[in-house]
Image (cartoon, rainbow, N blue to C red):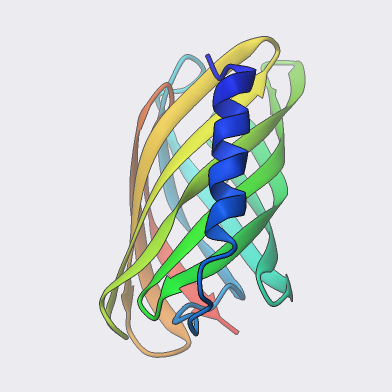
Amino acid sequence: NMKPAHLRATLVAAAALSFLPLAASAFDYNYLEGGYLHRDNDFSEEGGFRLNGSFDIAPNVNVFGEYGNTNYDQFSAGAQYHAPINSELDFTAGASVEHFTGGGDRSTGFGLRSGVRWNIVPGQWELNPELRYIRIEGENITSARLGAQYHINKQFGVVAALQGGDEDRVEAGLRYNF
C-alpha cells in the first residue's frame, strides 16, 4: 500500500530533483509506438496489442496515452514531468487516469509512475527502469518495469519492456519519433 507519508516523500524528492542544474536532455518525448502486449495478472493471461504515444507540451512536461487490448481493454492518459540529470540521463515522474473495461465491467482509477531514461549507448541503446502504481476499485497494483529501445535511426526504434509485480507484462514493438 502506498501510504500518504510515502507519497509525500516521493513528491518532495521529485521537487528537489527539479532544482538540479539543467543539462540538455538527450531524449525526445514526441513519439507514437505500437506492438505486441502479453499480460499475466488477475484479469488476463493472454496476448494482444498496445498503442502508446507521447507529446511535449512544455519544455519539461509531456502528455501521454496508452491503449492495451488483451481480453480486457486498458486506457491510460496522463502527464509526466521530465528533467535532465545529465546529458545521458533524465528523471521522470507522472500521473494518469486509468480506465479498464472487460467482462461487462468498467473501472476508473489513477496511476503514478517514476523512473529514469538512460542512454547507455548514446544514439543507439536506451534503458527505462520505472516503478508504476495504480489504484483502482480499492486495489493497489504496484510493478517494476524495465523498458529498452534500440534506435534504428532518429525517427525509428525497436522497443521492448518487461514488467513484474502485481501486473506482469511483456511488450515488443516499434516506435516512431516525430
